[in-house]
Amino acid sequence: MALSRPEDCGLGRLVATLIRPHEPTEMLREAADLLGQRIGHRLFTVLLICANRADTVRVYSDNLDAYPVNRVKRMGVTPWGDQVIRGGETWIGRNDEDIAWAFPDHALIRSLGLASALSVPVVFEGKCLAVLTLHHQAGWYRPEHIPLAQQIAPLLIPDLMLLERAVNTGTAQA
Image (cartoon, rainbow, N blue to C red; front, side, top):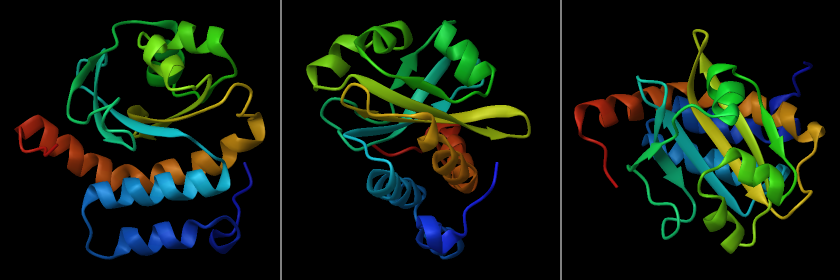
């Protein structure tokens, strides 16, 4: 994968946030903004993967009414989880059928007028630490959206590790 220059794709702002003192959710908000500008989304969430590898905790959402943070989301073993969480592979869902295949809460997703998704694993030391998921109208996401999202994902690792610690110690804030 050829990396773009930071100034070409907006990564400079994300890197600037990373190196100055900030709250972890600020970095996730910056990533959401950048992904929204460059790729597009109508919903952006970040799921932290729990130690049992079957549950997740939502640590970021830009729609808190529909998708509140700091709630355990029981994923169980699913084909989507096998591909994204355990396999570390990016996944594109193009329509309602794909969304229903991947997400147990597909009815809620559909009720928000969303019918496509781009799920990008954040992998650290060979394990999926979290998953970034962007949602939009049917047919929105294409393979050419993947490289930028995959370049952004590792920049979030330090902040996701801080959030993981907060979740594990019970100090995470809603």
